[in-house]
Amino acid sequence: MTSSNSESSPPQPKSAFRQISALIARHRWKYGIATACLFLATAFEFFVPLIGSATIDHVLDTQDGQSNPLLDRVIRLLGGPDRVESALWIPAVAMLLFSLAGGIFNYVQKRFAAQASDGICKRLKDELYDHIQQLPNKYLDQSQTGDLLQRCTSDIETMRLFLASHVVEIGRSFILIATVVPVMLALNAKLTIVSTFLIPLIILYGYFYFKRVKAIFKEVDESEGKLTAVVQENITGIRVVRAFGRHDHEIRRFAQPNREFREKRIQLTRHMANFWAPSDMLNLVQIGLALVVGSYMAINGQTTIGTLFGFLALLNIVLWPVRMIGRILTDLGKTIVAINRINEIFTQPVETRNDQVALRPDHPVAGHIEFQNVSFSHSEDRPTVQDITCVVEPGQTLAILGSSGAGKTTLMNLLLRFYDCDSGTLSIDGMDLKQLDRSYLRDQFGVVLQEPFLYSRTIEENIRFGSTQAQSRAVEQAARAACIHETIQNFNDGYKTEIGERGITLSGGQRQRVAIARAILRDPPILLLDDALSAVDNETEKAIIEALDRRRGKSTTIVIAHRLSTLAHADKVIVMEKGRIIQTGTHETLTQEEGLYQRLWNIQTELQSKLTA
Image (cartoon, rainbow, N blue to C red):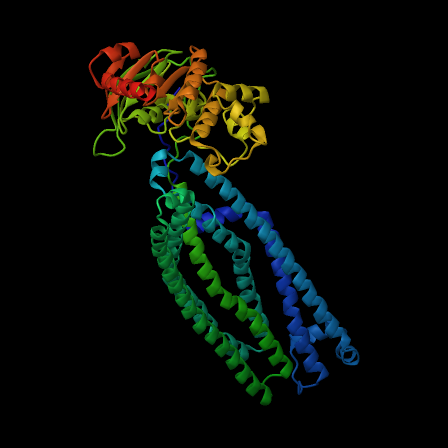
């Protein structure tokens, strides 16, 4: 059985256009229905001005002997000139019905396009969220939460708007240009040339504008991401801001990205104004030319009033999508920027891939843990842990002591494969962790992190996070073991009590005990407690330790603590300093051995004696 790599190879990035095509292909039948409805709506829209043109020419009798085959065919479909002249309500009703039919088909095409775009973006959000869940800690450590949120929300919303409206509008533009121009040629070739010769210039102008403005969209998105990151960080840490009286400072800190975002938005608005003003002017010039030249030709008998009416109506129909090409190109620029920002996440290698073959035994581990010359570094400056060698037998309790930054938490992170060691071997039951499937590996642990995270849910739901299928009795037993049951019972809603975001409505000690209950409920082969008793009082600490002692032998337990009373019950104690193990033994042997452990024991014993004196 082959082992999986620590990270999978990143997928090859696709071009934005290929990705848009791939997204559309997932809902091709909905877009197909939308396109068919668009074609029918366009056909009905054509008939409205043609009916008006034919009626004007035949009823007002302004043809002066001229006869346009296309308009003659339209008037015959309405019942013939005599019938229309004696019943003018026929063309009026026909125009109304065709307009209504066009509106209905437009509604249907917009609905199907919206359903397709919503489906695409829902699936994209699901895939993006799943991908983020699998990203390695190293990438997440370096990323701003606000910027990731921006990409998962605002950037996907930009894509949704484009896929909902402009994808079909692109089809509308090509259909109208491909169909209106031949109809106009059938009415009057000379007037067609006059009425359309500025259209290529309008399209060309939109293209060059698109090339120019795309970089600005990227700058606007990035500045918005920075702004979102600052807002998210400050809201999360609002209590720290208030506690240290940093309100004014944080307002000034917020002002910088806010000002940058405003300036980028103003710059973008200025560029868009520079596009829309000349674009609108060119459209108005085109209509004006058609009106002036068409009127001259009608006066000189080169065309009819009805034909001129039809030309102007058709020109308005075709100029709108041509004008929209600029808007489509503009929004396409925003969408490409959004897709590229989303792709930056998708192209990051994930921890594991389903198609990779990794070791996944069909039974829980026994809990034999062995570090053999393990070294790891977060940066190239200095190793975080170096040459760690230690063995923990199944069911034993290992205690780790050391100053801040000694590498204690790093050892737990290596066990959970949040990171992989740079050298040496870390194994469980003789199996190298790098060969184990991460999901299987993490299923073997119950973890209380240094900063326990609770969700904005009920207390029961937070405890059940350790085992979602656990019965209420098991939840209560875990809470009792963590010495939090009586506290929960004192709340008005008991276990159904809603706690705030990150468990803010609970005290630090209560949060730690809920986190311990969550880990105990899982009944794992290996239990990791990272300074999990730092916020509880001595009496509660003693009760929790006694509860853990009753579990002795059931789980291999690793405890990080600064209170030596927490470590006294351990089977083995290691003392770390600057990433290395400097002492190993039991509580009894280390208190007799000259070194850091003895010094700390003497200090804490002396302090305790003074407090109780």
